[in-house]
Length: 275
Ligand code: HEC
Image (cartoon, rainbow, N blue to C red; front, side, top):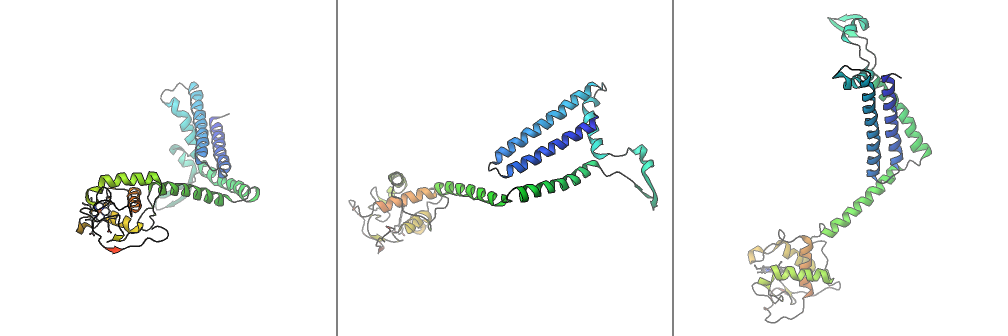
């Protein structure tokens, strides 16, 4: 067989493989599986080309060109260009103000794409609309939704969706003990070790200046009351930590610590949900 036929055959096989993988993969969930197979096919293809290069270079001791000869044969095969010295033969016999026209062949690469896409469309139609259920979009959508909800779970865990509108009281021990640590480290200096209040107000009584529900407490912690000496913790504590410390404050309500600071603000009654 001549080089151009072999190369042509190889390219055909290559695209056939890529095509069948695509069809096969359309029903699969895992993208990495598809990529893996594509890579294997590409590797096989490259190996074949390399093999050809070596086989043909043995017949040709013209150094330098040896390795490139299959490639240039391939390019010639793909484009079927007429060499400049032979252009006279394919020249049209008309002339537009000195501009001449050549009767070039349609390059094979173009024909491959053109006829290939026609053949492809027939295969595609058959596979998706006649043999298959054509439900690829639904399947794709479902896997996207699955991925998105997995991402959402992670985001919820990191507290990315936590703000003063969505925050809820945590009551589990690890969260409260983490909240206590945060409190002792950052807040006790102004609110007292037990929340009895020193510089800042008493956090255990029924009276609140900025509201005693979890959302208000979270909001006060997040934005602070800078004018009154309560700083904003937004930049120092992530939302999860602010939720924990706010929940801890809720948990020490009514503990009546020693030396309580006098009540400030207005009476706040807990609602049923404990918010
Ligand atoms: C530098 C002192 C200081 C530190 C530190 C501090 N606070 Fe405050 N905090 C205050 C002051 C002062 C107020 C009263 C603000 C006002 O009068 O409006 C206050 C108010 C509050 C309120 C609102 C109380 C109410 O009655 O509505 C909450 C809740 C609160 N702080 C929580 C915290 C938490 C949680 C921390 C630690 C992460 C903290 N604070 C750290 C000084 C401080």
